[in-house]
Image (cartoon, rainbow, N blue to C red; front, side, top):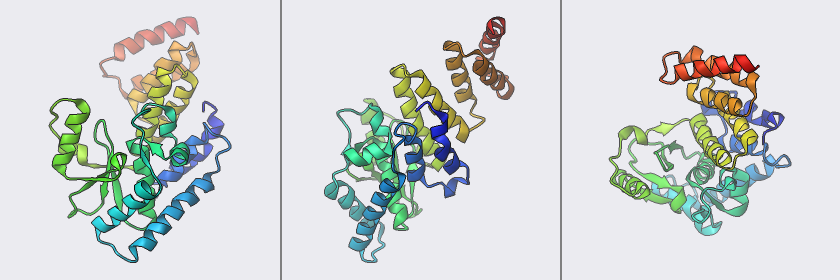
Length: 274
């Protein structure tokens, strides 16, 4: 996954207006960096087939709850998709091809599959990036419901979201309205990549983590924290020139940050050894 040439398709997919990004395709594109022989069309055709079956079952019905229940039945009852409770933190949960093959995933990857099916039947849905959990909802203002793809498409109301958060954090959590605001396609992809990044950092697979950080920065080139963190990781692995570029740029775009002085001291050390 550290070979940047294998990220070409991902970079090409995200190099367009956010609303035009095919979320499922982009997710499969970054998976190509880990699985170079991945047949992109095979998995996209699988999603097409699910959508076709849902469309057939709906027979023209457009009532939101009916649509959601039909997608739920096809994904979770028919195909057996489910949340990976036993191995939540394994990397395969963040690769859409493996989620499709194994029928298990984490909230955000299962949500991407759900969103892909909804998009294919022209049922508008959006991602909701709550802290600690990821939900989706119909993109109609009058429909105040959310869907939890990790829990077999469970339908939630706002108070249910608060209870779910409190359960996740094992303490009372006051739900903030900005946690229920839809997120962009690039934000969803960045969150998926962040999950992978932390897994690889924990496993000390530094090159893979660096490649993922580069993918995030490609989407958000002025993300000062990500640029700083990549620079620090370059520094820790004695890649002085790359560290110099990132850390100098960090100071350029965030000169008043709390850790600016620390970064300046690191730059002095780099200049002494490089």
